[in-house]
Image 1 (cartoon, protein in one colour):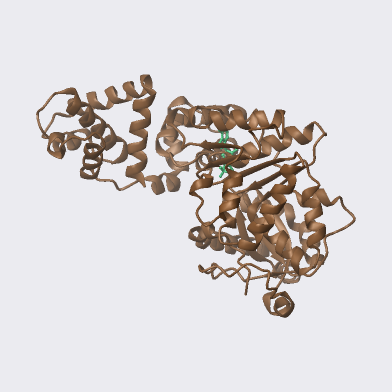
Image 2: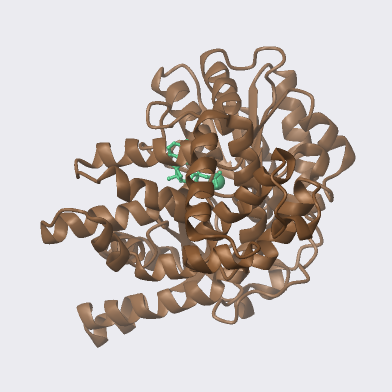
Length: 480
Ligand code: ADP
Ligand code: MG
């Protein structure tokens, strides 16, 4: 078949999601009873995960509406409880492949992916149904904006200040020269979607603009759906009637040539008409290989802003802001601990903090370093990297261009001593070795020397942002 409901980047997680879904189904069954479950819920299949939204498919519109009305909230709650990063459950109509196959094999559909979907997921085909005409088509066009994703709730720091400034600028003066398109890129969970929603909220809040926000994947599904239902003209018109078009996670269009082509035309039509385009992706336009050249060129024509990986400082600020907003007192020690341990992305960081807060609220106990260890046991374990001191020494020596033997030599020249201290610092941070053990690996140095190195490096990182970034970079390299 020609549809892949699971985005490629979800496949490493799909086992996890399939398991979560299994538990949720079992739970629902026990809550509603066997008969009700069989009647309504058994036919749900697991669809793609898109950012913080999970899609569930039902075979008919009637079932979809019923399930949404009767069980929608409960499903959302169960999903969030299983996987805190999932915040929305989207219910969609898809018919099982066998029924739709004959009519659905349109030549215009994109070529099949090479990587298969998770075994847990059937491959559905969109229902041959026209969009609901009773509602405003534009409303239908845009995915809902998360009201929590505003400029006010976005914590600004070095890694994201440029992207933030560009986003604000576009929200204030959409379609101004030099800022159209706005292309935001960066790794997963660093705030791209947050910024896009913030722009959308500001622009629609003023009531002057119609904004369509959707993931590239949804753009593709809509487009394919429109081809099948022979309503591409309508789809195009809808798209071309908005003031602001935002396409999130454009990397999903790689290899989907027809959809890219359609996007390219829409893009040109909108820009020519003085409308604003905002696009996000995980890489810069020039690094998005597999994207048509002319589209890539167009995407790079406006403002390209990247969001860098978080720094320790930003992680602390974000945790502070979120802890404060929650109303639960989280000691600075705990925030520091989290910012040290969970260095990947903001979503994970937020997930960990949310769990702590939920726990504190539930049991009415204060958050302590100890309770943090307990509550986050599994998350922390997953972040326990098994980096060896030897690896650290090797990487640090390479980075600062010193000989590996100098890690254990007695030389005290700063050019050698500083990297050695960094290696000790990282050994303390990234391994579970004790200070004396670390000392031994560095030419039988005393544990007080290691202690001194650790505090010296921490102090320097506070004072010298470039140095801090260097050390963070080393840490990330070692962790990955
Ligand atoms: P991306 O789209 O880049 O994968 P998101 O925008 O979905 O990432 O961000 C993931 C989560 O982290 C969201 O809950 C978002 O609100 C939060 N987040 C990311 N960056 C920041 C920030 N600078 N300040 C506050 N929250 C942030
Ligand atoms: Mg996103």
